[in-house]
Image (cartoon, rainbow, N blue to C red; front, side, top):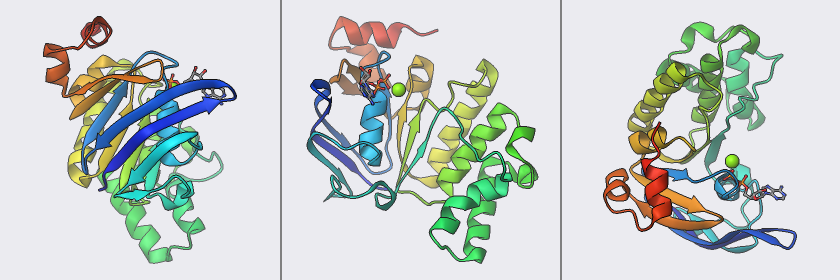
Length: 238
Ligand code: ADP
Ligand code: MG
């Protein structure tokens, strides 16, 4: 678990600024959801926190330490994307173990962590299978498992359920909530699905065109939206 702080964080691509000085304090163990229309900067913010994209202004801190110049693998963060990106030629077990082997983690520890993650995600029966023999939902669990084995302090999810059908999406959403309770980790979760945001979040961050419109609990945003943009976004439930 770790707290994450953003101070006047900016991002420009060439001469175009797409994130305009974002301030945000995420508490240790909190589940924070970023929502907002396509192109508002949700993925860019996650990628900057993960260290996959350099920031062009401001400061990002994790556990009180400024990480602007800390490379991604040393930030104690794991990211889960919407495209599962599993290695097709490796088994589920090997997919989950791969990152740890790169870090020269002892074999017994790799084995223990992979089996523990598989148990939590209920994918133990599939450890010897190849990704192509799995359903979309099972593959996404393997992708989450790959994040868990690294024992991250912070999990970042970028629309992890958007490739799943409605029933699987609901089921996996419940699992992610359970995961948050089990692991007691800080989670930052991007979605354009209001139901996911309202049900998963301790706090929701509503973004619009590279700025924060409002931050609050689902109930606060629902009851007291600061403007029509937030109201429209929170109310447009499917
Ligand atoms: P979201 O995830 O909220 O849909 P993004 O963070 O992907 O939005 O994008 C925010 C803005 O930055 C968009 O206008 C997008 O076109 C632009 N953008 C994202 N990545 C790049 C890039 N590599 N080069 C140039 N512009 C980019
Ligand atoms: Mg995105």
